[in-house]
Image (cartoon, rainbow, N blue to C red):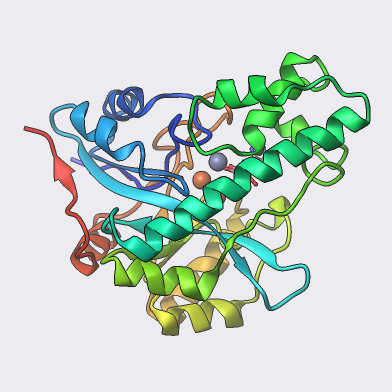
Length: 286
Ligand code: AMP
Ligand code: ZN
Ligand code: FE
Ligand code: FE
């Protein structure tokens, strides 16, 4: 029997469209054996996902941290997946709280820019739609779709909209600090979609080598935003640096077209992550 492991998904605790309970039920229905919940900058989905965990499914509790690398100006935004960390580690909690607050301020400023150009989007309505989850551009994208200005989320991320013209930076966590905090909280850090050049600037391999020396454990290679050549490059780099390789869907419900389990992680890599963690355990129901 093949074990299917998807280590990167989003719920309504951030910018996914299934709530955490629906997410774990959908993961079981999709035939997954292990699923990670990795909402942006929050652990709010952990409790409800755990309580709803269907029999036979293992849950890896995680988060996707909004980070920045200051090696270029403006800093390059990047994402770290953090697995199985202590959700009460004070310094990490403080950093996540700060980033979520900054996301709110930035979202409202993006809406102000849109409104200044006569575009009819409404911040209180966007906040209401986000339902208390970490606010991101996908929520603003939905408002642009509701206003009939774009047809799809991808179009909303185009250069005329949230991809460039109305894109504002976030106040992200310094990536070295993030790696140290994840480790201090007993967690395991994996660099999410490190070569996703179609999304924007990417960081040089030298930085990934430095992050490996600082305690990064793995690289996400198999991801829809990587071309086959980029996936191969990431695998090669991981082999060179002694890092684990993961693959995952980065499922966002109907905010993206990708389905649960579209990309998966090997049992060996999963076991390596679990073995390296000391914050919380991977849990199975029953
Ligand atoms: P933010 O965190 O507010 O900067 O928004 C980034 C989020 O938007 C990420 O979770 C991505 O998954 C999503 N995203 C980025 N680019 C696209 C795109 N082209 N189409 C759909 N979603 C995207
Ligand atoms: Zn997202
Ligand atoms: Fe990401
Ligand atoms: Fe993600």
